[in-house]
Figure 1: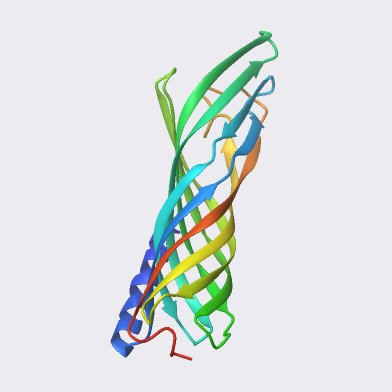
Figure 2: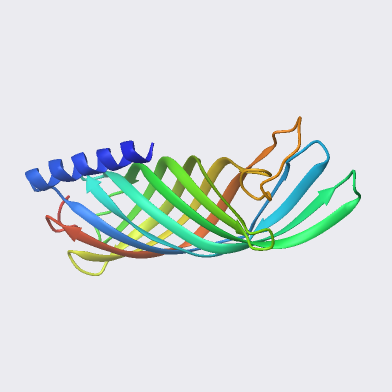
Length: 222
């Protein structure tokens, strides 16, 4: 999946550079809120974790297919902590640990812009791709990594300060589908029989960034 996204991006970049179309470089800095995830990782073992919110940063290349449509390839990254509580019902025992978590989103999708005739461009977008999630349990000295299907829905506005530089403000909802499982993601590496439980991760974010337009004047391209 990751290779396919990269190949599409390279081919798109070659096509647009060759024909001199508009390409935009976006730099993002968002705040994402906490999300609670939980799962059974054996028939008698259960965990609940709080994926803490914080800074999510990244960037994207955006190719203007038409004056009001674009194709965007995006990368986003968050480094955070996940306080996690485990229960074993057979042993009647609970334990707690703080996990180090790194979340990487690689997404490809489209945006629809609303032309207002001014230097303000409202937009909405839908993106699909993968989430690569890395965790480290320092207490047990165990690291895990998982790659899962992901999607992103966003709404925002671009405010152009000049013909080629603008400020982007946006809200977004990111999801890694069935990304959280006890033995794969937040677990200690062990596992029991008979249970395969997963939880979908949802991250709501607010923020924005800067947009740089190449290959034309963004405020007059309509």
